[in-house]
Length: 492
Image (tube, rainbow, N blue to C red; front, side):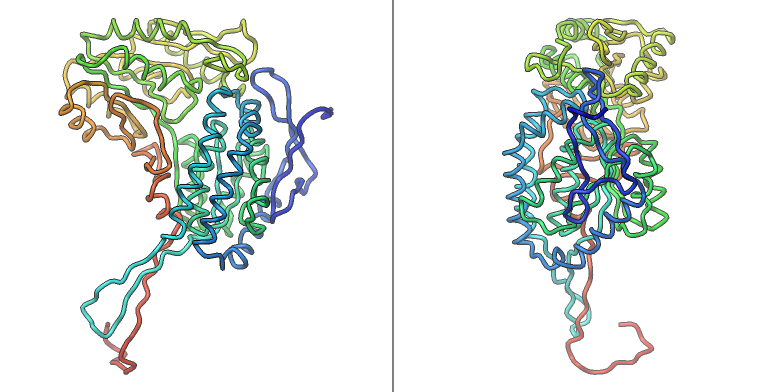
């Protein structure tokens, strides 16, 4: 029975659409454990239709839109997001269990990304290049890469979509989005704003689907020119392999196992607060989670005590309640994964400073914020991404060892350094292999600052000027100036 549930439709070619098969699926609220929305269950045929619509828009009306006109549309879209922030935030909370207090902040600020890229849309330019041969004028053009497939995750779906979408639209691309089957609703609702903003049909297309084959069909579609993906490293490899069959470019924002390095001179209260923000905010379900606490042995006990006592005061509960500080894990598979890691850690000898178990008293998929000690660099919970509210603490004795431990991971997404020594702060930041380093802070992002990782954390960068380059091709144009003929059997 679907009576009383929110109803959503896909967007293909500027029109609301059901799945060609007629199938639907229910989206579950992880707090209540009950379905709250009905979503089209699109498949490869729907992907085909969406890609064709995106190609038609690129080669038609949208392809003729100037950067100045794209800027105006992006500004209007940003304004509409602000006007609809409350509704979109509620949808994200219902779908993923994220806190309303966090999601309303994200959605209120999200229009800023579109305003930022509106400011760049009319400034995408090439340059004239000097050549050794005076008979030629050479210049470059920055042109849209084309149709972009965007496959997005279940945590913060609209923000992580925006990191791809805003620069792609500024560059003049068209897009087909496949949101996670665990949290598709806010993306489908967001797509409704495009007609209001004045975008031509087919610029933005969204296909929702329950089966993995829907995302696979999009990632490997021959009508796509680039794939942008956020999710696990294992799935990212599969996406990259599918894209490579078509020699398509990819942007991959993948997993992380980010270190928080705390030196003995750090403000421990500030560090404890940053550690809590880094691993317990968003229930630890963020790629940038600072899940490895690498702390100097002289302040280990004091800092762990501070963090554990703060973890014990974290208020778990209804994510719609403004007083709640941590909601449930977003879905059943992820909940089981987190609980498995907690059991494994304790079986391997970890000591629980706080938490360590699920919290069945609240119902739903609640896990207590957990602080673990007695782990080593070889512990499973230290090596693998948990994607939950689990912190692993271990010690170092000097700066060299701290860096060795911090860099002892296949990931390289983010990290933090806590110290009052400005020389050490910059010295360690330079040697930390991570795409983002915070000094005496954690979990801060902005549209103007590039974000991405080293190693298993992905390829390419999102946000900032760098993102425009990810969505454009650099074309060189040679113009012969003399009008004469030349020897056809020589170069140049």
